[in-house]
Amino acid sequence: MPNSRVAKLRSLLKERNEQALLVTNAVNRRYLSGFTGTSGAVLVTEDKAVLLTDFRYRIQAGQQAAGFEIVEHGPDVNESVAELLRQWGVSRLLFEDRDVTFAAYAAMKEKLRPVELVAAGAIVERLRIVKDEQEIAVMQEAADLADRAFAHILPFIKPGVTEASIALELEYFMRKEGATSSSFDTIVASGERSALPHGVAGERKIGSGEFVTLDFGAYYKGYCSDITRTVVVGRPSPKHKEIYDIVLEAQLYALEHLRPGLTGKEGDALTRDIITRYGYGDHFGHGTGHGLGMEIHEAPRLSRTDDTVLTPGMVVTVEPGIYLPGFGGVRIEDDIVLTDAGIKILTHSPKELIVLD
Image (tube, rainbow, N blue to C red; front, top):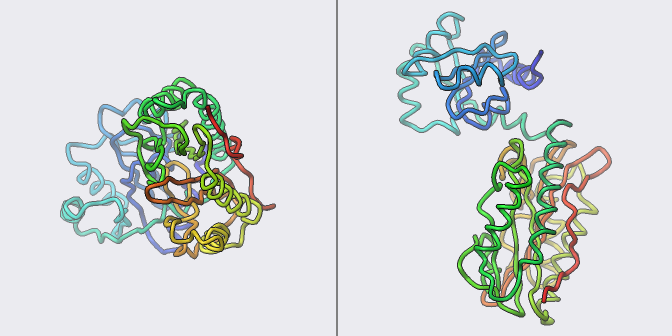
């Protein structure tokens, strides 16, 4: 069966007038071939698509990498690549410079001589940035799983319970529901620690009258979800309500106005301008969002520095926040996919301020 992703890659190679690409990045290898093993490389030319792997994965590769010729490489994969390139008459090879260490590059250059090595840049990532219908369907399942996890965890959040125990319960639930793992180290940050945007769960006990920020996601069928909700345990103060309402207003405004044709920079401004107008711009130090897919952080980014034009099929997070040192912080995050009509929101957990006894 023809592999549409390899076909698109070949178009990019032709566009750049290049003969071949060697893929060593594990995520890109899986994206192109479907192979989930931990060792191997993909070699693509105008008419060849080869997956090189070792003895341990020979059978698995044959089962997963439809449309690929499977080659069991020797002790040095570079020697096997060199032999194939000699057979095919390839004199110039793109390699994933973002994935290869200098030492690995030096070894590759020595073994593949006289083939010229050329930096590929983000050529496969350029394909991954736009998701197809199958990918979006899996990401919806991953988002649904995260939503169920949020509903599950609310009764566990009480004064005296540690952040770490909340994170453990979240991760256990997601695994039990079918996730391979969490998408990243689960963030549960309470009280003054909620002012830490990446406050990974610790042994702090949740107190009364404070924020608890939960940022987590399910790694499911090779794709990530990523959701953040902030709740209050005990009676919220006026300051709690103030900054929560500002972040919610900014997030809802962005969801209403985000659309294809905007740049990542313009998408970021949708939330940042509102938070700045209320006087909290200095307390919103990260970008409004990031691309999401097989990895938790992908292109494009909704940030002050990203000029990428948003197009249908891109999946991004929308996650403004306000973080006040010594007091606490709020972040609200959803996953969305850009569509021809605007956006489709993948995560649906409630966003009104939840107050837990």
